[in-house]
Length: 193
Image (cartoon, rainbow, N blue to C red; front, side, top):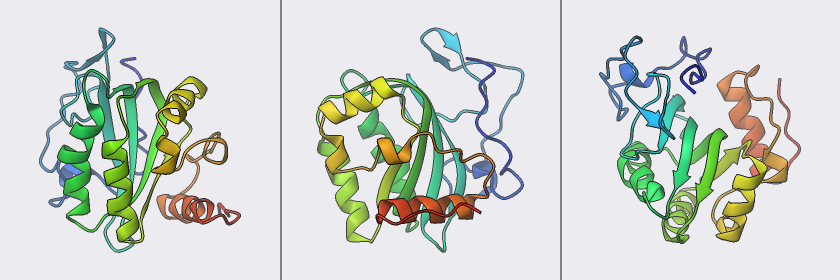
């Protein structure tokens, strides 16, 4: 787990630690000290904490003009014990929404497990976004994670599943990825350039 780094090829376009509107502004990363763990395995020090002890994130890109964020996650998404969705919503998402970010692309291919509790925070988040013309989309969820999310009825609040899986997002510029995902959300055929 310690060698799974957050995606870094967009760092020349955006880094949250240098963005004074980001909740991670000013954070200093120590590349030689591993402190955070998932399942007792250390994770790469570039991942950011938002309050959970099992789930970590990285803001890969923010566009304040278009109002979208691309975030990558690693770990176990545990609402049942850790209440990760509450921590995510209150400590990170609401900070971004205060900056008029209402369209969220969450890369979930490194989310190893999901344990749901209820859909209240997802419903609240979804409604907050829809009121502002936004949406939430999860990319590349593992099959068993997707199954657990469906059991919790999250598909009524966030976009995930068949059309959002197996997306080869890394070769693309963030703006092109955003346009393609937005087209998918609106039921159109996406064009990745």
